[in-house]
Amino acid sequence: MSELYLRPGTPDDGNRDYLPQRIKGSDIVVNENGNNSQPYPERLQEFHAELVPGQGEDSWYEYVPESYDPTTPTPLVFSMHGGVMSGWGQCIYTSWSYVADRDGFIVVYPDAHNKLFWEQMPSLESEFNKHIAGFDVPEPTQRIEDHRDCNFVLALLELLKKKYNIDEGRIFMQGMSAGNMMTTLFARYYGNILAGAAGSAGPGSLSLLYDEEGKIINRAGPLGIWQTRPENNGFGMRDFPREADIDRYNRIYWMKINEIDPIPEISVIGEDNFAFYKGKKAPMVFMDVKNRDHGQKLDEAFLHWDYFLSGLRRLPDGTIVDEGSVTPRKGDAVSFAFAEGVDQAWINQKAVPLSQKPLKWQKLKYHGLDGGQKVRGEYLMVSIRDLAAAVGASFSETEDTLHADVVLPDGRRLQFARGSIGCLIDSSMRQMYVEAIHRNGELMISVEWFMRYLFSYCVTECHDMAYVTDHHAELSYFLADLLYDILTGNPVPGDFARARKINWLGGEDFE
Image 1: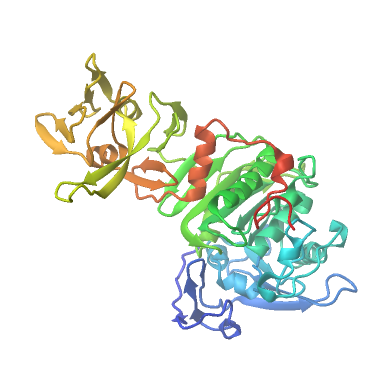
Image 2: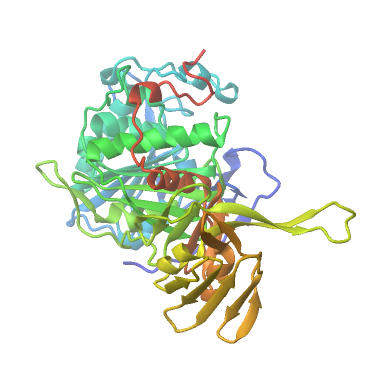
């Protein structure tokens, strides 16, 4: 593993173009919420050739680290650019060149044949895709055998295998937006030559994943899959619930093919929200990024490689094996999630029944407001019995259930009483965020106060769900939605025939 040097660049904060040509070959860097660049790497080389006979010249970019040893089989990563981009743009808008320098593999960045958008297959969104931002998008290819860009990638792979000592069990593909759509298309039809594929931002059209009867459309079989969906993706979609539906059925597509255990391990680290899935035939990772717009994070290549691709290999018989990634895929050691109105909670990587559904309760200011009121806070109220069980504390209550005693694992004794905003901790009083309430024979208090004050845990809330862990975390919408599916007993929703009709634009079938 080579030591890395983070190269400084020249900011171009006045730029509002997506990928200005002046960046090519320069040290200019562009940063906005979703696309963040590095200076143009000196080792990036540009190539041109007609690789598909009779179909014109293609172009691509190769990044070969200084440590490359032609006597050693070397992994290869294809990184596919987004729409209105280029291979060199994908290089500087990702950190694959840094990872390649550190771990000694080769990255190739192909250009789409029409230099802007990859060809796609016909879908419910085809008419919309043809007019994205006013650009001339290629007509969808009717047969995969005629797919110009897939044939180019296949020919390019053969060229690279002759040029370099490629480890044929460790060939990967990653793409962003339209490049993710190209990656998932390639994975569905030619994924049998890959060990893993990763995509960012643009989910696949469900009408390409499922036929009219809801059956999966796939030729290539199991494959290690990573899907990143930025929370503020919104590209071509109208609302969070619709996008969550599209993400859900993209996820389930590979869950079916890879024979995935439907209950993942959950980890939220800063803005990165992970669901790590194990499968009988291949693993999968779903990642949501808090407060991110359409695009890919600059560090995603490190996340894709360290957590996932670094450990994957396809054996000669076609089997996918995980030999151990740089960073183990483990859920948070402290991991609690409670949702308003849901009678199960996520307790240390398991769904556990609750004695009472959590509910929202407001902290009010009303004295001196002449009958009016102000909301000073809103909190998720959870049964004290359930909170005690989650943290391994003992619980007891009076016969009328209006007073409760909790003894924490460290010996602290807590007392709670209906209507009191106070908590007695041993022999001292501390005020909670909001008073204890009594519902259906259960005393309930704010999960935010209980976890923050008594344990110094991080509590992050999104989509009427609170997630608790022992480090900084920011829960995002689509991971919360995934947890809702698990906690409501529906981790793999069905009705795939209807699912294929869910399109980006709203309604059912595209008009």
